[in-house]
Structures are given as C-alpha cells and as structure tokens.
View 1 (spheres, one colour):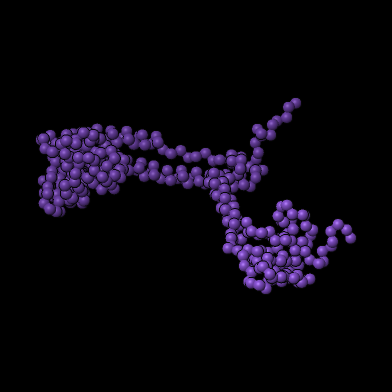
View 2 (cartoon, rainbow, N blue to C red; view 1 turned 135 degrees about the vertical axis):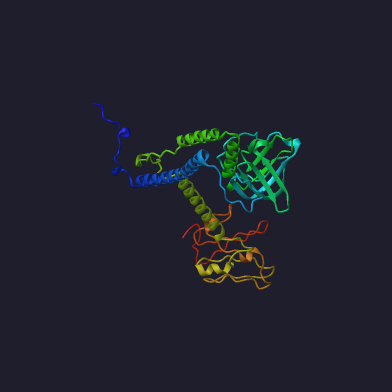
Length: 363
C-alpha cells in the first residue's frame, strides 16, 4: 500500500498558520475593493448609455429657452443643446488631411485633450446652440457663424480631442467647434441626433446606441474568486512588504556602518600624551631629548621630560601601545614592556624598561 503524499493533501483552513489566514483576508479585501471600483464605473457608463438610447428614440427637443440665444428661433424650431462656452475653429485648406471624416457616428467616449491639430486655429470664444435646424455660434465681439443641416455633409468628431468639424456642401472653408471636455459626450450626441432627425435617419442613431449598449453589457466586470490561505506565497509576504523589509535592512546596515565610521574621527595628532600611560598602570616611553639634555627615569613614576627645550612632534605625544603592536624586527618584549610608534622616516626610540622588570636569561 502506498501512502498519500503530503504535498497533495488539502490542509483545512483552521489548521493553516495565522500569517496565511491574514494574507488571504487582506488579499480578498483588496480584490473586492478593486472589483467594486470597476463595477461602479461600469454601472455609471451603463446608465448613461441607457439614457442616450431613450433620448435617441423619443427626444424631440425643448421649446425653452428661447431668449438669450445667439440666434432668433423660428416658431417651429426647438433647442437640442446649449453650450455657454465654445471655441470657433477653422481649418487651413492645406492641412485638411488626417482629420476625421464626417458621418452620423455616435461618440460615447469622453476625451481630455485641449491642443488643436496642425492647421487648425481658434478664431473666437462665445456661445453655441444646437437646434432642430442648425448649429449657431456667436461671440461677444460680434462674430457669428451658422451651419444648417440641409447644407451639411455631417459632423466629424475627433477621437482624441473635444473637437467637432462641420463639413458644409457650399464650398466654404472647413470650420467647427471646440467644446469643454466635460460637455463633449452630450454635445456630440445631441448634435448627431439633431442632424439625423433633420435628415430622417434617427433610427440609424438608435440602432448604433443599441449595439453600443449590448457590447457594454457583455463587458460587465466579473467578481473575483476568493483566495484560500494555502495560496499564500511561500515567504508569507507580498512583493511590496518584502521590498520594504529589504530597504529597511539596508538602511539599518548603512546607519550602523556610518556610526562605526564616525565613532572615532580622525584627528591631527595623537589623542593624549605619552605620560598619561602612568594613569593606566603601564610604564610610559621616554621621549627623545635634545642634545645635551638628560632624562633620568624615576622608578614607579612617569618618565621625566627633557630640560633643554620644549619637546615637540609626534614622539612627544605618541601614547604607549600594547606590546603585541611593537615594530617588526625588534626582540619580542615581555608583558609590561611598552613601545612607541614614530613618524615615517624618523628615528626609532629605544624601548623603555622599568626597574621592576625581571632580568632576562635567568633568575
């Protein structure tokens, strides 16, 4: 009989380690919040498309407002859309290539650009109104422009900019309107709907919206599947926390090395004088004396300084060091001896010996 492998046996959630359970809870919460955000955006766009489809099927325009518009409306003319702020633009005849083609195409995607394409320039800023018969523009400086649907090939909506060009059949220069980005979707829809209603093609616009709505419903976000504790990474940490932990370790190491490097800063000279060795119980080395001066050693006390002149240089300030650090080539001293380091190129002072040292070579 073959025993079952432990690698393929399912471990109950209650028997999982605590860190795996916590990871599963955090991961499920993160996935649920991300799904809620995607679904909320999808639902807003879905509601907007439903409203546009209803408008395409039954909207016939508004009789108000009629005052304060850039044009005087006829008795049977109704308003589809009013834009308080819009830019009148004009296209140079030499740069017409690359611009969108006219047609009754429903545009339901928002755009956020502002710069105009090459060859398109803004002439003035004013108010625009879309009616059941025309599109009219008027500025405060008195500039007026009007496009009647009977003289239009159709509107041309730019896919990346809030720009709509109106192609006329009377041979005049191509012009159009640039509207605020927040009003782009509604302006384009009502302009297309007004043109379609005036030319008897309202049903085509409604069919386009029905197809767009069906595609949007097929793209509905799917709720994520919950993860189990046994799906946690082997380390128990996500990539983000691992990176943060590694960065923290590097930072601690850097601070430690920096502290070690700055604990003993470099100085211009030795930190203390040679005669301070007596305080620690070690015999001090005799500094070099000037010519003609004597420096007798005092038993049990510090080495006397020279009397001829004030001592100076590294030899007067070099502290005693342990006997293991004596220069190479000298006889190995005994414990209690002291040697000193001298500056490169200088004479090497003799090693001082105290009277209490035992004689070498015998009792």
